[in-house]
Image (cartoon, rainbow, N blue to C red):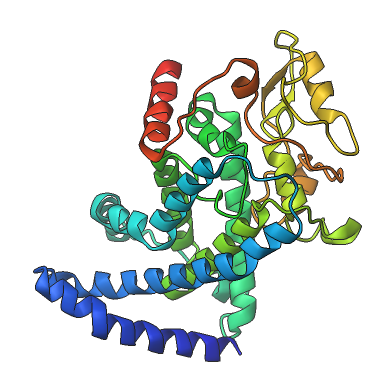
Length: 344
C-alpha cells in the first residue's frame, strides 16, 4: 500500500516537474538548479494535496461541530496566507537560499573529521519495512518536537516570537502555520539537523512533515471534538491542543509572580477552573499539552491536562493589557521583532 502511494506520488511529481516547473526554470535562467526545482515540486505537490484536504474535509467539519462562532474573518484570512506560504513551499525555497548552504558546510566539515550520523531504522533492524521505519522516525522526531515546543514556552526570548502563534483568538484549521518567520527558521533548523543525524531519507522527510502538518491543521481547528478517555492519550486531539492555547493554561504554569485576576473577556471554561486557579496565584512561562502529535510525552514528563473543556484562546496580556500582536502578516512580523528587542 505504501509503495503504491509512493510510486503514484513520484509519477505525478515527475509529470508536474517536466510539464511546468522545468520549462519555467529554463525560461528564468535557473537551469543549474533543476535538482532543487524537482525537490521543490515535491513540496508543492504535497502542499496542494494538504490544502485540498483542508478545504474539502476540515473546513466543512468546522461548520458541523464548531467550538465558537466565527466573528473575525480578517484574522483568519491572514492565517490562510501563512498556510499558503508554508504549505506551497515558498518558505522552504527561502531556506534553500539562506540556511541550507550553512547546513551543507557544517555537515561537510563534520564528515571531513570522520563524524557522521547514523540510520535509526538500520540500528533498530527495520530498514526493510517502510511502515515500521516511518513510525520509528515519526516517534523520535515527535519527541524532539515536544522539547522544542517546551523551549518555545520556557525561554523568554523564544516566547516573544512564539507568542504570535498563541495570539490567535479565533483558532481554525488555518492557524497552524501562524508563526513568526524567525521562530520557523529556528524550529526547522533543529528538526532538519535532527533528521539528518538520525538518517531520515529526503523523500521520507517530506512524507513525515506532510503527515504531521495535516494532523496539526486538524488539531488547531475550531472543532468541538475529543477522542474519548483512551484516544486522548494516544493522539493529540483538537480538544487537547485547544487547551494548550487556552488563556492562563496553555502558556502559563503556577508561579510566584504578583497575583493577577482572571483574564478579562475570557469565556467560562467547560468542566474546570484551572485557568482561574493559575491566575489567582500568579504565573510564569510554562503550560500544558506540548505534544505535537503524541500526548505520550506530556503524560511522561508531567505536562498533560486531559480535562474535557474548550476554553477561550489567546495570550493573557492581550485581554489584560491590550497588547497589540498585529493584524496583518507584516505587522505581526514587525511586532514580534519589537517584542524580541524589548526582551533583549
